[in-house]
Amino acid sequence: MSDEMIGYCGYRCDQCAARSDDPEIRQKLVDGWRKIFGHEMYTAENVRCDGCRGNGRLADKQCQARPCAVERGVESCARCDDFVCDKVRDLFGSRETMLIYRHKRLANLTREEYDLCMSQFDALPNLVRQLVKAGKLPDWVAE
Image (tube, rainbow, N blue to C red; front, side, top):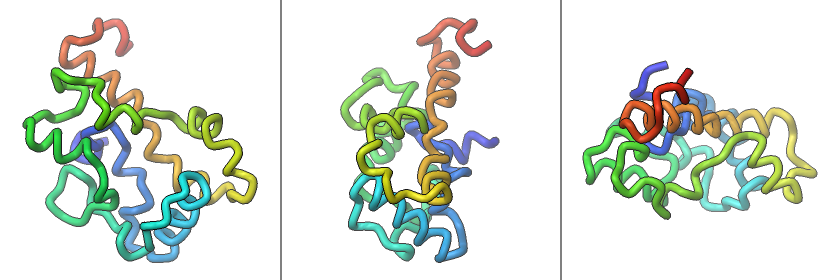
């Protein structure tokens, strides 16, 4: 996996269904986001994304982490002197954490929607790797 496809916050852009050329896949992603997170602003058209490290389309226009990282010139939020800040704190999670925090909203969620919506949440290992590279965590953590 290329670092180019890992978002500043550690999200796996390469795994996100918003990058799909298939509008039906993007619609399933949007439907899942509505069920899990209550996001009403996304559609299959406006969620299309090229990944946050590029200069193309962006799915999350409300993201505060990307513009901050670009402005500060850091390759990862984990490399920022202000890490962990409020701009990125709510983005941390894992599939399991999302299941726990959102369990009341998952009754009508299909397995396909779950898989499409949660794949990018494999971010924590990416952030840990960046913290080790930045010398903020000991090398043994990456082993």
